[in-house]
Amino acid sequence: MLADGLPKLISFSRMSANQKKMIDLRSDTVTKPTPPMLEAMMSAPVGDDVFGDDPSVNQLQDDVAAYFGMEEGLFCPSGTMANQIAIRMHTRPQDEVICHENAHVYLYEGGGMMSNSLVSPKLLPGDYGLLSAAAIAESINPDDIHFPKSRLVCLENTMNKGGGSTYSLETLQAIHKTCVENALALHLDGARLFNALVATGQDPKMYGQLFDSISVCFSKGMGAPVGSVLLGSSTQIAEAKRIRKALGGGMRQAGYLAAACSYALQHHVARLAEDHARAQQLAEALSGKSFVKEVLPVQTNIVIARLVSKTPNELLKELEAAGVLAVSFGKDAIRFVTHLDFSAEQLEQTVSIINKL
Ligand SMILES: *Cc1c(COP(=O)(O)O)cnc(C)c1O
Image 1 (cartoon, rainbow, N blue to C red):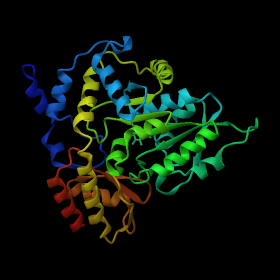
Image 2 (image 1 turned 90 degrees about the vertical axis):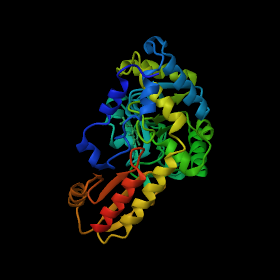
Image 3 (image 1 turned 180 degrees about the vertical axis):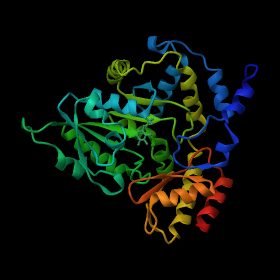
Image 4 (image 1 turned 30 degrees about the vertical axis):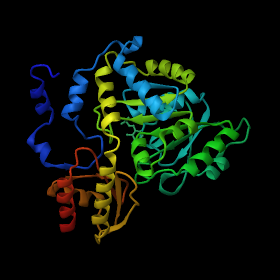
């Protein structure tokens, strides 16, 4: 039950009228916890998670591990930390990590793999941000002291910079085989893995079989305020826990946050299909515009439009003046991300705003 005064807190958390007026499609991280999610958080049993005593954290870790058919999970404050821990646990200094040239682990984690793990990235091209088994096989360094040791492959699914693209089962299986044959570890940056599952209908347990480790985010389309889970074998997660501590990610009564993630796991997975359908409609509206050169194929909740005759900043200003926020995505593109707080009514408003541009 809600404690006295909590309903007040909930309405306060819905923020100012000013913020409410804008249709915010900058990212799926902008969502606020729903009232039932807040209620789940406030009523969570908690303990000191550094002692392993927080029942809500333990529950989340077990549930997410079971969902993907992996041995154990580790609750982390961010997706970045979960990825950085994974890279550290799979590599030794001087090793090389094979990833796409637009991978989040390379582009958007502040150079973390180089400073936290003393490893270098090998950056591969690939359509829509996706890698192939052949490209990976070709990039593996020979055993020669001149070269860093190829040790780990990081994939991203969905692929943010590829427009929310997803991997097919066949490609994942082929990459897995290449990694096994070459003694490479395989990590998945699954910040939006739930979106990929809903879009493709793939079995989450297949991911547990193909990957050595997986990170999933609950603060993106899943709508929780904070939290990611890193999955792996029991041995790896024991190591991951040591690394998390050293990075300052050991949290105490973190069950309040984990409860939001558990709520999301129960209630916010299937509804991602709505976000995908709305992204599709945005893409249709955008692709009719003279200033849009190309909209990347939309498979999930990300819409990337490449522009002609308008710069990203010019278009973003026009959109903002009309009440819609998006972000610039490279020198000739803008990105919209649909999410839990983007309603059918807001979609209609956004489409009519785009039609009038
Ligand atoms: C958001 C995101 C992450 C993790 O980001 P945090 O903001 O640190 O939680 C990792 N990978 C991808 C592809 C992402 O979009």
